[in-house]
Every structure is written in C-alpha cells, then in structure tokens.
Length: 202
Image 1: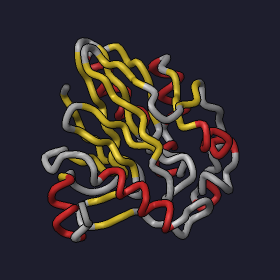
Image 2 (image 1 turned 90 degrees about the vertical axis):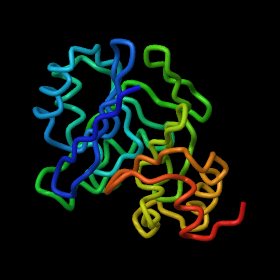
Image 3 (image 1 turned 180 degrees about the vertical axis):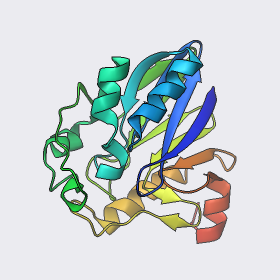
C-alpha cells in the first residue's frame, strides 16, 4: 500500500490518495479537486472510491467535482449521509460557497473496502461528528478528525460529543503501538506515541 498525502483547502486538510494493485481510493477530498484529479491521472491507478471520514466542509469540498472527473463513488457513514445535503450541518455555511450533494453509498461498521490485495475496515468512531469513521488497514489508521498528533478532535461542533469521542479514542488505543495514524490535519503519528502522550490506560 502506497499513501500520498496532499494538503488541500483553506484549513490545510489532509487528503490521502491510497493505492495498491492498480487501484486507488481518495480519503477526504477537502478541496483543490483539480490538483487531486491530476495526481490520480498521473498515478494511472483506477479510482475506486472517494471515502469521507466525516461530513465537515473542509473534508468534503472537492468530492462532487472529483466524482464527476474520476467517475468514482462517494462513500460516507450512514449516520452522516444526510449532513452532506445540509450546508448548516456540514458547516459549509461558514465558508464562501454552501455545499450540498448526495453520497453514492452509505458505509456501516465492519464493512470492508478492498484495494488491490489490501483490506480497509470501516470503524465507526463518532464524537467529533455523529458519523465519523476510521479506515483501519494493515498497520495504518485513517482517523479523520478524531485523533491528531498530540491532540484530539473538537467535540463542540454540531453533533459533537466529548464523551462519545473519548470512547472512540479508547477503541483506537486498542490497536498496536506501531500502527501509523493518518489524521485529518497535521503530521502522521502512531498509536504508541499518542498513548504515551495522553497516558491512556491500556
């Protein structure tokens, strides 16, 4: 599995292009759709899906254009699919252009996304938002805005809940120390580093 991070949009969102076996997925297309599409074109891999870890504007802004450019399906957890259509819930009313579109597929806990010979499991990790997900692969975790290097996601936005977020983080802490965490913003980290920093109980 090869992972390319593209930092996009006004809030420096991490968009990940993950490719293996001639296929790729785009995780969190938060803007600059043309740049992301050009990278995928240059990569020469089949764009299998655009997977959104949650519905906030800075993570979804480029998805509609990318869907049209790449003919890739947009996927999001079922608890947050309706937020894609509501500019208030997806927070795009705070930016210049309200965003409203529908997902092509609603994901559920435990669902498996295949990518070449790789497998990514959908883990429901709400708290930052109701339908936040983590994509868990072999030694990698795409966590959206649940967990950052030396930080956790906000829980004071619509649909956020601090207690729920902490339960989600507790689930993430069950992964091995050497699992690499790819967050929605900022540099990658590891479960071990974050467990030590926050002194989470095992």
